Length: 218
Ligand SMILES: C[S@@+](CC[C@H](N)C(=O)[O-])C[C@H]1O[C@@H](n2cnc3c(N)ncnc32)[C@H](O)[C@@H]1O
Image (cartoon, rainbow, N blue to C red; front, side):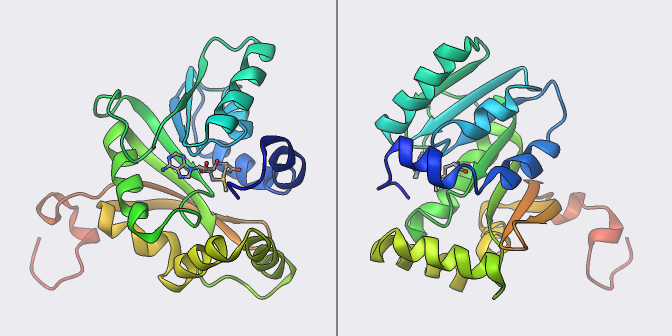
């Protein structure tokens, strides 16, 4: 979707994905600090800013960051900021700078080899990570068919990335690579998108007995 300009993205895509933002926001307690990785037009950052104490939006696109920053100034939100940067390398942020890192509809769009580094960086800078992306298996209902149509309209390279994301098992297949463990999930948009809340996986010797799937006594 990076080919769409900010205005078109805001007019065409943001209204469709409102349910994703609402589900994601409902998983974050008020008073939290949040970094939004791949923040796009800033729609999610502005929604989260209603309850959060601090929100930082990060995006690779200078045009989207300029768009979001212009809106931030209009809204006079001092606790929100936007940074043009690669979210897989957030050198300016020490470990656990935020309560939450959120990644909404970014993982299916980046090249395969960038997905795990993005999740690892999210885990490094935040206590908990919330990922919203296509559910696998993607349903063959109206929502699933619309998702396939939208992704194919975004161009052959984009569609290839989307197919590789789905083909490799989506969000749940990526979590172990980043040593993240799902805590909660919600399906939205007719089951086409899943929102997963995850945190750093405990090494097995620190796991409570009920999480260990082996025969040995605890
Ligand atoms: C499909 S859009 C999703 C935007 C928004 N999060 C949403 O839910 O509508 C994906 C966004 O991720 C951004 N992006 C892709 N790779 C990135 C990276 N490595 N670092 C930061 N942003 C990235 C793109 O510029 C784009 O704005």
